[in-house]
Structures are given as structure tokens and as C-alpha cells.
Amino acid sequence: MAGNSFGKLLKLTTFGESHGEALGGILDGCPAGIDLDFDFVRSEMQRRKPGQSAIVTQRKEEDEVQFLSGIFEGKTTGTPIGFIIPNTNQKSNDYTDIKDSYRPSHADYVYEKKYGIRDYRGGGRSSARETACRVVGGAIAKQIIPEVKINAFVSSVGEIFIDKPYQDLDFSKIESNPVRCPDTASAEKMEQYIKEIKKQGDTVGGTITCVIQNVPIGLGEPVFDKLHAELGKAMLSINAVKGFEFGSGFCGAKMKGSDHNDAYNADGSTKSNLSGGIQGGISNGMDIYFRVAFKPVATLIQKQEVLTNSGEIREQHGKGRHDPCVVPRAVPIVEAMAALVIADYFLQNKIYL
Image (cartoon, rainbow, N blue to C red; front, side, top):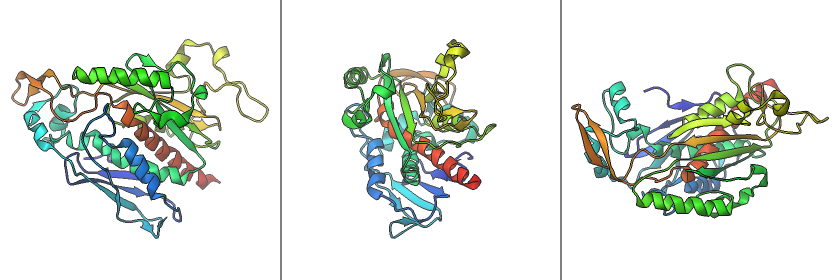
């Protein structure tokens, strides 16, 4: 199976399945001499872990990271950083019903057709549990670029949207509620709606907005390796993501150029920022901001029609522990992937300095 690595100079390779012994990863290309804050790594993992509130999956995993290499006396050595995250709360019997069937909108069918075999326990390699490894890599990447500030937050759940620009939000409130929405009034509505959806055995989607600040001018390349293209790839590689837009995004398609152009200030900054901090594929020093759309989780705790491996259509009731809405737990994953991209380009940019 190809496609288990992400990045160029800073490269994260992940391995493991949802219900195997452990997940793990290797982060290659990390510079030597960085004092790693292991409490920060742990806190990032706590933000992603299951069972943290009533509106997420109740699988109980502490997600303790065991580092195996690349670190000596608390500092990175410049060699590959290997780590594992043991799986301690598997309930594989929850998935015996789908051993011979394919759930709608899951990877079950295409996975088996492509590889001729699949680990049906929780989705195996295609499970969102794989993203725990990304959060570890992202937590280290953030420490490579400490001057860069990355804040992601839930900006919508279903039809409930924050109606304020990110500049008017207090990012310190993101972790003040289980939805991870910095607007208190919107967060309360979102939380109540997710609870109602959960009672129905249904799921709902939403969006996450990410703001990256203090990015230096010059990250990215003007052709195939545009900064926003790599950010898009990073976000679209996250489970359940269906869309990515940066800057003015799709709204910009409705505008005239005279309204959309970002006029310059004398110091090279711009009066507006519809470019989203990236012009010609290269960072321009302004805030980078983008939005990521997540679909509703495909597993419903109610009856759905499924396809069996014998070609039969039958009804099946969903089982297991699943998120009614994935976006609250996806916030640290979005930040982690953004950090890996920015840190990778930062290291690439040093080649030209």
C-alpha cells in the first residue's frame, strides 16, 4: 500500500490500524537541537482523543505517546523520530456484523476491491484513528516554528454558522467549550444540535476555519508546489473532508476584480486580505486563512441498507462508538497538518537563504 508518507524535507510516515496493537509514525527531517516540550505533545493528543465529552465517540483511549528514537536528553538529534501510540480500548466485536458487508459512504467496498483484503475492525487503515499520528507530528512541527501561530476552530455545524469574521473572535475561547467554537452563543447552539442529532442515531457535518499568523514572506513555489496547493492536499487527506477553500474562496468567484484586488500599503502589506495570505503560490506575510468542510460521519446508529459481498442488499443496524459530528475532534488535526506544511516549507526556504 502506497501513500503513507506526507512532506518533503519534513516527512511524516504513519503506520498501524484502528484495532491493531498500536499506531505509530516516523518523523524524518526534524532539525537537531530542538528542546521538545513533551507536555505540549500530550496536551495536543488530549485535544484529539476520543471520550473527552458527551458529543464525541465514547471510546476510551489515553493516547499516550511512546518515543522510540530521535530524541536524547529531551532534545531532537536530527535522526528520524520514531513513536508508537498503543491501542488499549478496542472492541472489535462491534464490527463482526460488517465482516461480510459494505457500509454506505465508507471505504469498505473500494478498499476490498483494490487490495483483495480488508481489516473490517473499525475501518482498519482507513480509520480516522490514524490521525492520532498526525497530531504527534504536528505537535513537533509546531515546535520547529514557534513564532508561527496556528489556530483552528469550528465555524459551522449543519446550518449553524458563526456570523463574525475571525478578526472579531477571541481564540483563547476555542477550548472553553466541547464544540471548540470561540463564539459562545454559536457554540451553545451547535452543542445542543449535536446532542439532538446523537439522540436520533444520526450524524451531521460542519466546517473548520484555520488561521495561520506570523508566516514569513516567501514560503511556497510558483508552479506545482504552491503553498495553498500543499495546504489543500494536507486538509483533503483528513478523513471525512469534502472541501477546502482559502482566502475569498468560492465567494471570490462572484466578485469583480476591482473589488477583489488587495491594494498595497507602503510597507508591502495589503489593505485587505482576500488573497488569504498567499499570492502566486507564495506567502506574502499576511494572515493565511482557510476553511475545511467535513461531511457527516457515515456510520449511523440506525438502520441502513448495506451491500453484502455476495451481492445482496439488506438492512443493517449500525453499532460501535462513533462521533455524531466529527468537527470538534478534527480541530487539532487541521492544526497539525497545517503545522507540518508550514514547517516543511520553512525548512525548504532555508535552502535559499
